[in-house]
Length: 126
Image 1 (cartoon, rainbow, N blue to C red):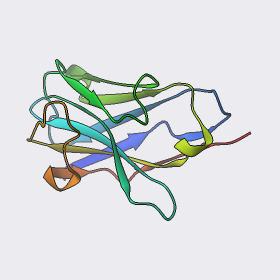
Image 2: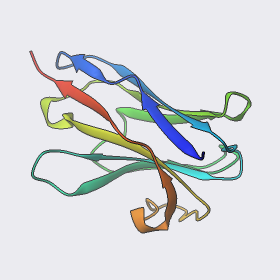
Image 3: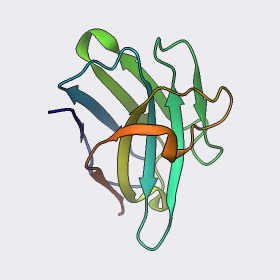
Image 4: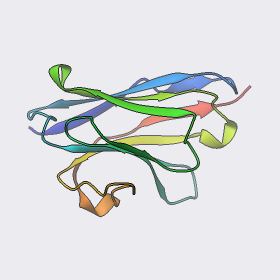
């Protein structure tokens, strides 16, 4: 069964940090672009960051640039999202996705991704 699983979410105070992980089972991630998305209650899905299959290229949405960092360890079949300086408006369900299309400087649109995880909740609150 081909599956992506996110982990690492939780409750954190404003200004705190979390590291999300996205691990694949049933397939290897090393040929896939990986994207991180989030969806807050009552809002649409927002693309946050993508990393190319080799890890040589990354892009970020303006809302997280300078605070979030995407990375990957293909040997561990895992992609990470390091989130620092978290704000209450970062509260959302966070998803990772795998696809074959790289959009360069732009976040790959969600419809271009083939596999999605089930999401992990991140809550930023004091």
